[in-house]
Image (cartoon, rainbow, N blue to C red):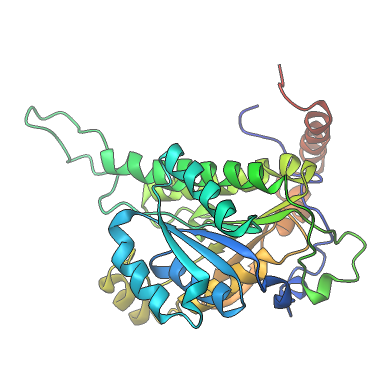
Length: 331
């Protein structure tokens, strides 16, 4: 049972034209919207801050105290620096996170959008069996556990606090123009975007802790849908493929180019995050590879019978409905 059940009605809205739903976001609703971006001082997070501010949003940049200088440089470079505030935050510290959300409400009165972006990757393989102590015994993978903590626990902290505070919001209508006429499009009390990775769907990169943590984020996306829908909050995700940021070495960038592969850009990923935050639907994940985007959660649902066979898919989908109706606890 811990492995979960097949997807049933976790996706609000019509995903029959997922690419269309990515077109022409109505960014006017971002004017004066209040946004929190974790891991916002560098890389994809920093570019996401830049995009939201350019659309008139008020942004709280949440990142470690050690990134304060980077955040200062970022804020100074923004088109409207007065719209961004850096708040030193460790996503693993519950008190830090509670303070972040409380301060955001103190400053701006509400929280409309939260981007759960903070994440790290290990520098040494958790499967390095040559990592032994002075007695020749295999050492614990401390770095691997930190990756799991930051990426998974940190995102869970962010997701829970975002839902907790957003449930008090009055509804606001954030949607793409392509979805405007859909009868399933609905107003929302807030929008949360989880930044996972293609490593959340595939595991060929070999960074075991990172891959496991990103798979966990896809699990959070799926498992949060019933609770989020009950309080009128949208939870979606983006899953970028390789995007040159400080997380990755220049050596990898060189290998990527040598193989003739097209990398994402931080601008492209940030744009996808902004568009996803405006989605009128919930439970979607937009994969970004080489600048191209593809919604993948609906495809998973549509192909379930082909993947598992009709009889197994029917059993799992029926069980999913039973669990959804029963609620918690399951025992």
